[in-house]
Length: 356
Image (cartoon, rainbow, N blue to C red):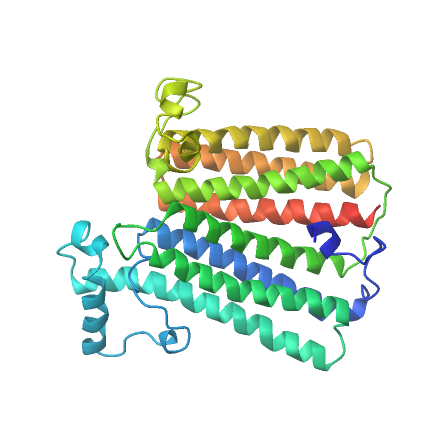
């Protein structure tokens, strides 16, 4: 089901439950969305501090508690010392240094569990109070299932770094990040659909199509950002607008690996170059979307201008992250910016759907 259809009834109109009585449901969903944004940022910090492999087991229930004694800390540390990351990268790390990376990963996992409870308990309460009809109930149930799947994907990602390599697979990291952002977008879409637009202006199929493309390209760029993070590609070719002295790197360097498709996922030069290209395309799309929305005016034009400003700010953060060689503060601001851009294009898409 398309994202814009997820947020509307089958006839394309706003859902019949979109009244003031649903304000608590809307606020709850936006709170969940805020927690997902926090989860994405903490996940970025976990990656940047190379903390993700510090907990070598997946214990959804018993793992809620951290080590509570010196002996328990030593057991966790001994488990970490068995994996390649410790043996090849962090050999000689002290127990206190291990605790630093452990707390990052533990906090990331605890936040995931917290989101599950913050979602499930109010959901059951709203069902009991009759605020959720069958259609909305199915959507919310789907979000909960996706959240559970995200936990499994997170462990699938971590498991890739425990044997025969010192970090996680960039394929799995990008999948984990993208799924988190799909859940974020779906949550924002449902929340937005539960409140009728304050102003309705007839928008063209062209503008709605533009908004769909914009949403798709934002998700693609997030996936590419995950590949960049997974390969530490931001630490290579740290100049802009040139890469290694070229505006467009030589084709022989972009496609040095065989088969050719591997370059799009494993060649550091190609992965970073693609991330740059899609950033340029996204900026151009945001500009074109705003120019088209100006003909409609009102909130449609203002939303489009906001998206253009957010995309421009995000591109600037990306450049700063690159040229300063991925400092954690700017890098996390860049990751946070990606979620804000995603929310903006999602709200815009739902609102344009309601205007149809």
